[in-house]
Image (cartoon, rainbow over all chains, first blue to last red; front, side, top):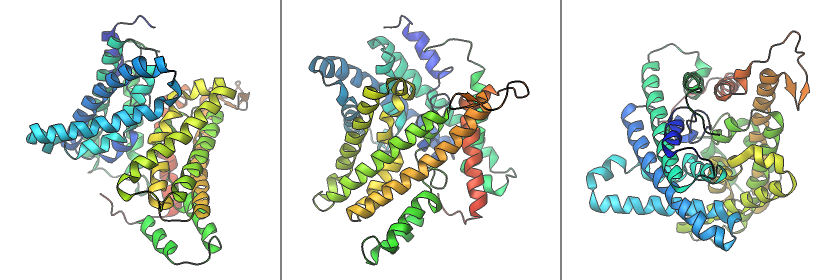
Length: 196
Length: 220
């Protein structure tokens, strides 16, 4: 188990090892929902919450259920079931107790089940052998990092609407290239801290 | 839009696999390429393309999973209650992904290490789910296999193109053999790092758009 403190992992997951810009996870909704800052902010919040919670849940299930029973090879199917169930639960809970939050996040919650950043974070946590506290830091950092990246791109895309882009590159291709520039900017943080 | 068109074509019964098999193949691999035209499943396309070898293995993985899940979903399409079809699809896809992952771990440990979590992430790859939902649920097994091969192939080809250029420009090598001599070519490290992936995919999609000609954009 690595000795890095949870705080360092938290910072690294936001800046140097951004789950979107260096690990390319959650690209589908990243490209599809980055048209407006308001929308992307809502999605970013929902992803941060679900990602943190499912990372914790999956940590507990992996180490206290799957490992003792020797069912490690079933991790994919168990993780995806946990994520789907959790999202469903949150949706019902939020709808019942906080209608305002439900209207703010409502549409985004089902979308999150298929966001690969969520499953990816759980898999990274297993592969990198994080402890419990480290997992919490990583989950929170990864979620916030994803939210930061999508809000940044949404801001850029709002401005790009008025620029003159060659026709074949309009829409997705230019968004990819801009994301590349964004990733390059984030590489500037690289020397700061590092996790494997 | 194109999917609707395809669905219409497949409604007309014209023999099982006669003209339609070829059409399905062409549609999946080129005209409706999942990666470059429909922009599905780009996470793994960006992540594993830093070397050509990785891209090929990933392409093979997707063909295998796509064919397997399409076949099984199609075979069970009349027995699956409509309301739980999503969960059934995910379970089927996850089964095939686990099979491939265990195979890699058993025979190609290094490759499994390099691909890391991205094999597992095929479960959330929208291409596989999309084909199961949009095609295999309505079509007979054999045609579904063809569709799986076509879409897997379309994905694998684009992956191989990106992998080829990223490895070539990033290290000057192909499959680990030096192609661009170090004397006159300085490898551009940027291409194997994250930004290079975004640039490469953006340019490939742009070129696909340019070749296909302008299309009225009516999405969103």
